[in-house]
Image 1 (cartoon, rainbow, N blue to C red):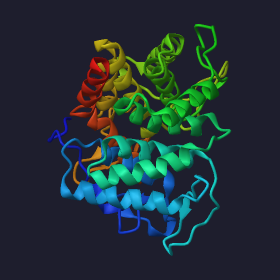
Image 2: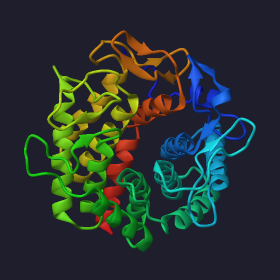
Image 3: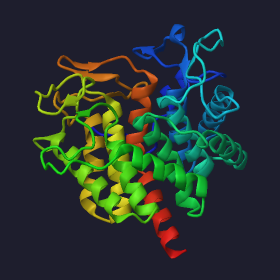
Length: 349
């Protein structure tokens, strides 16, 4: 099955968004308002809306909404709250968890590539405020570094962004020399390819060839172990610990989206078309080339299904899975070309 248009379908994302933010969950395509909003998903929303090279008026509205939410979630010290109820009451205190990292990812992307000048300006202010912090979580630092890299692509002299990217690469560490487990930790959990992507970015943008080589080696291994009979078979939500049996289900769209991002970055940095094949494999996973042979999105709504189970797709269409689908599909159109042209522009400079 193929997608009938080259434009990523934002219809369901619009359905999940009100004038406050992006609702986290849905029952099939129906919004579950009782679960409220979270900074994690809003930040992902800002990433995908900022990636659009020719955004519609609706995509611009979504970007404005998501930026406003993130600014509201941030405290004076740069940390972020994560969970906002439908009653517009925060359920937590500002902290530096994954949502802080993803907020900086969204803000950095918007500051570099946002659909309007004022969005780029205000996103940069909020990014600078958050980038003064450091999280003890390597995953949170990884997500933050993705935003820093977006800024470095357009301004290689951005010192705060460079410092954040360097610190994130150090927090991730370097892979084991064991060819059967070339990974810095003993367990693979979620959005694993993002760690490899940050090392690739650090190697490229900070002129660190060993980091680049390590990141490419990690990503090559990830792509290899998550390919079965020519299609993706991504790690399940339970993850995988070294020297233990690997489970097959439930597979999550976020793993596919992270792998697509990392392969797109590797393709742009190295020029090796093999990485573009990895991006195509990620797109194909959503279109039915997966372990179950099932399409992982709903063409009637534009929503991405929440997971691949032994019985087929989980038909709920929440924010994370829908954003993962849009993010991956963007690489089939203009996002990869944007990364390549940006790299060429930076090289000419």
